[in-house]
Amino acid sequence: MTRVAAVLAAATVAAAVTAAGYVVEAAATDPAATALGPGQVTVPVDIEHSRFEPEVLTVRAGTLVRFEVDNADPIHHEFIVGPQEVHDAHAVGTERFHPPVPGEVSVGPNDTGMTVYAFDEPGTVEFACHLPGHLDYGMRGRVEVIP
Ligand SMILES: [Cu+2]
Image (cartoon, rainbow, N blue to C red; front, side, top):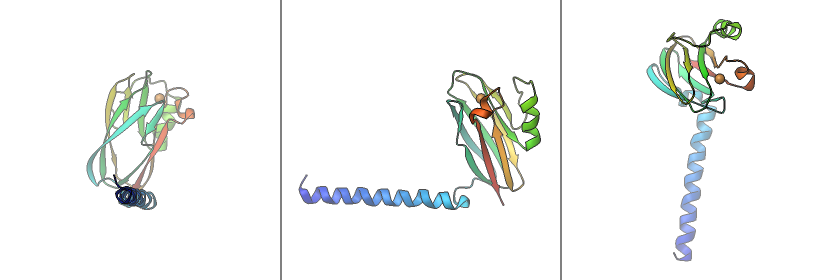
């Protein structure tokens, strides 16, 4: 490669990075730009090292989300999404496994699970794993529901 070609190639890379950086910044400042829905959408949720990924999700009111939960850890986890009273009940409850109740699914080691939940009203809806110690460790996230 000639010296001129190398300089041009470097300039092209720099321009691409700048463009990508702008997209990321725009998405971070404008939730509506990346909001899902309305209607039915599927959201993959990965669990690794007792953390959810993504931890924050933005949907429009009127979105039915199918959460496909992939547990890469060698231990059990659960994905519980819903209003505060649901989390309060699970925090003191003794349910180890969850049947396919909307918004609640248990996921075994290196296994996958699925649950659906309808986000109808604007606001913040939290999700969490309520197995002992997991929430305190930080195994939680939230869905921001915008109009
Ligand atoms: Cu867990």
